[in-house]
Length: 375
Picture 1 (cartoon, one colour):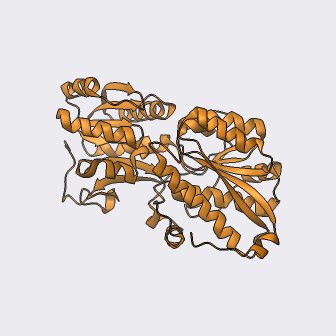
Picture 2 (tube, rainbow, N blue to C red):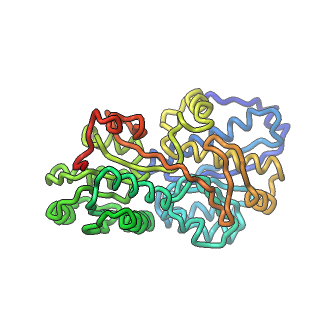
Picture 3 (spheres, rainbow, N blue to C red):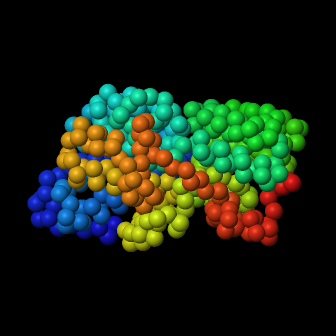
């Protein structure tokens, strides 16, 4: 990295430790590495600021996108009284598994990627906050948009984690409200390799769309086998497939895939240009991915709060709970009584020529290209 801070400058300030937790290995490691880099960037930029009161050290922990590992590393961070706050979790199943840990140890935690509503709304834990939106908003937009395109019939295939089951619940609800029909629903394990049984049944039902509720590795396998078995349906995924790993894993087969995600692309964010310039200048080899800006915003909020009230968990917790209209690179952050940021904006994406392109900017929206089975 290009960051540098003289040892004398660092020693002149008290050191404060903060943590980042995300999946740095396994199938969704690309998202975790982008999040880690983005959180690290926020820390390093703060350490370069001569007006900051403290020098910050970042404890980085790998939850592997596995709930049991997540509990272990969350406990490690929370039990360390030198850690004042943490920016935590991309995977919803892990975020759900760890909320009790943060509550028990009174560690302020700001989620940067997990979208299951119950992470914030399923408990009364003041320790747990989230800067990104939830799958409720995402699926409401997805169902409305796709029915407006003329689609009427879906087969849903979702992983059986809390993440996948949550997407199935909300998407199915909003499809029905918008006049669509779910022909069949299949739950599959997150490490399933063969989808012949599910896709053979799906093909016989002749759906307009296959809706996939899960993460990129599973989505890549599913989409490949759709092609192999001749399932001619539009492929629609969740925010879990908006990654370079999905595009690279499928190559030309990714073309035309639809997905929906909270917030806006980096170049359309209020602080997107600043973030992009700083990220590139730092020389990271991994892209920030879709949720990197949220990890940066979460860490920046944590550091701002520590600067304001001091390195005390209780004081940081109280101050975070009062966050309202806080300026960030992803827009204003305002936490409701559950610690959930009020985020209304959902961006529609389509895979075009090996990139995730905002729908409104795509050749699909202009009519130069067509989705599958569009009515």
